Image (cartoon, rainbow, N blue to C red; front, side, top):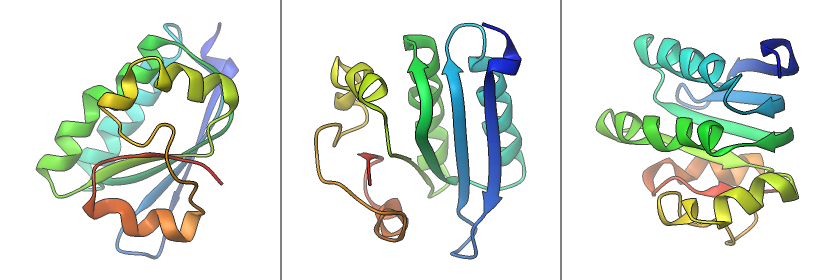
Length: 129
């Protein structure tokens, strides 16, 4: 996969500096660095509260999922969080295969964007609409 097969849109939400990342395409060994760089740039700017919309992610590999695992502790160290929303069935399956221990709630409650915003005081969850 080429980097062009993976897209990231950013939007700073008016709710306490929360950044919404809309991902699309394939998040895998060829594209995960683009997401890593984006998150590192956001952290460098002081944005540690991230909502990640996965509804247009067609595929995620362990390398792609590892970006969230690898950045979650840094977000927590700065009173932030990473909340994953709207996973496709394929994406949800990857998290349910072992990563829901790190990102609890993989099979848990369904949340809309508004209710996901209040979850930053809890452990990061995998939320869906």
